[in-house]
Amino acid sequence: MKTVYFVRHGESQGNKEQFGQSISTPLTDVGHQQASIIAARTSQIKFNLLVASHLTRAHQTAETIAKQSGLPITTSELFAEKRRPKACQNVSHSDLESNRINEEWWQNFGNPDYQTDGETYFDLLSKELDGPGGGCPTDRKMSV
Image (cartoon, rainbow, N blue to C red):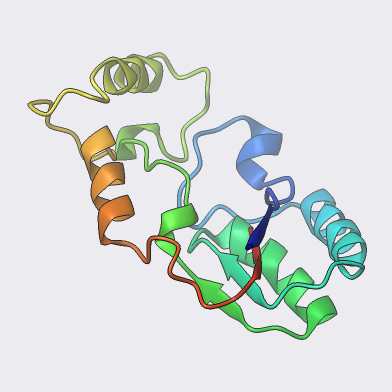
């Protein structure tokens, strides 16, 4: 039986400053401290695969765990957050136009006819079907 452990990335700049995040949003100093804490905690767990999404904040968290575990990081977009429309990235949560676009995107998330540069339900489904589908040859995984 496989055991999978999930770790959320540390505090990011977008979390702290309340703005829509992009792929390259980094961790804050607090986020780096949180990554160190979780790396110390996971040092007590035996796992043989470390997977992180391509998002900078997740990869920075995984780098800290990798230093502690000695394992290389496998990068996979399958573990990334949904990609919001570009108009909602790096924009304050209080921006009215960004909120309108975000709300429209959510309302149409499962609509196959909706056109957006944000990720849709069907994009996520495609990633799942095209991805490795659990074919990992190891018993224990750590995903960040």
